[in-house]
Image (tube, rainbow, N blue to C red):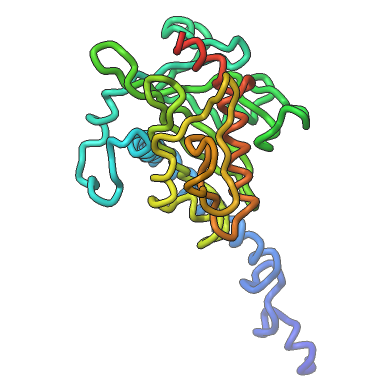
Length: 282
């Protein structure tokens, strides 16, 4: 038998058949599939087991933002505070933005809405639970608006002392998500917070700046029944007329400032919470 023949003869110690070769393409694909399957099992199991913790952390973060907007919590100094206990002061209610009214607790449950865990952002992506907005009405560039929204009521001896509302809209690069708190007159701003956005750091990202947010305290949204709050370019001059309706713009971030103004115009207007606020005032 020639050397070449011996090399191809398995009995003579030649090359092994491809099926038994560990480096064959078949075995490589098989091992890869097994590894992918094992990893998918681990990731899926972790997602299932950690889901309650993720939901709890999401609600905790939401509660902190609402408390901060209402002036009851400071992320820098109150890290050890009992957030759940502080948040328990709020009454969480559902409003129907189509019917322009606040639902009773029973009505909300009858419609399958659990106020404490309702996800308005998720609902806005569901055509059966949201409304597509036309160009003329989509002032805040949100495309779709969920039919229902949650609002957060703080009471003092039975009367509303603060009302916190969720707001969102487009800035320069991203959608800004936040809350605005109103005083009992449903007109005066008690606080504002933007907890998520992708605006440019140092420019539009200054919506996070406590100094800028503090400028909102005491400002008034409505004049003669219409939204009149403006985020102007530059600072509000001392001699300006109606300064209670004007906020300093963000330096170098004209489009983000305009976006914030549009957010207020939409959510405090007739297509947002305006009719509900009017009803509460009445």
